[in-house]
Length: 170
Image (cartoon, rainbow, N blue to C red):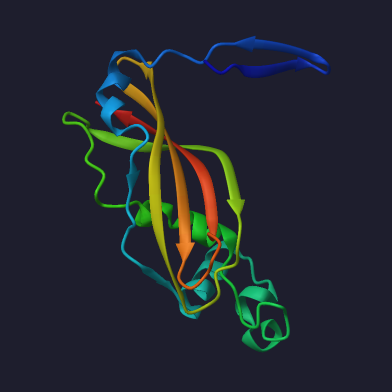
């Protein structure tokens, strides 16, 4: 069993075992380690990039100025990394068969996010997911850890990789 560390003060480390799966998490045992997807493709075109720039107030030329972006190593505008990240819900594969009795789920956060390769304007992306772990947090609450990948069509490297945490209720 692996250990995880908690840093209390510089140079001092306390280790504790990871939490036991618990009764609610046991419902997910058959899904752990399974890869789901890919999802349907989603087009990341310039209008989507421009709309994201408006919402987030991020108008860096590499995203919104095709003429200036053409002079960069990318040769065109690229999607904001956070645009790609924000699409994870839409990019979750539809073949994930969750256990009966779940009422809803919530985003809980991320343990890790990496923007590995740019998503050029006009490129389609799709998602893959593997359930890495399920842990009972409280009665009726299960913390799910997903290893997710966003692939960009025509790219040898993924656009994004992340460990996404969600809370399942029910």
